[in-house]
Image (cartoon, rainbow, N blue to C red):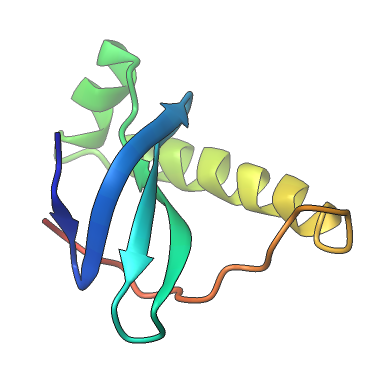
Length: 91
């Protein structure tokens, strides 16, 4: 299992679908956070995204933005939090 994502200390894997979600601790603010790691499971989509063709990246970007829009609609719902850190982290 991943132990570190950027500055975040991963505690456990929570689940995933379009990516993996981890429970982690942010040492900067001393609290638990959920981190989603984008990992497409569709092998055809992965092949397209890693090719020199930008079409695959556009597909991934569209899917990710659609998910973000759905989450944005839930912003004021009970037990839903707003993203605290929008930096892209590579590991």
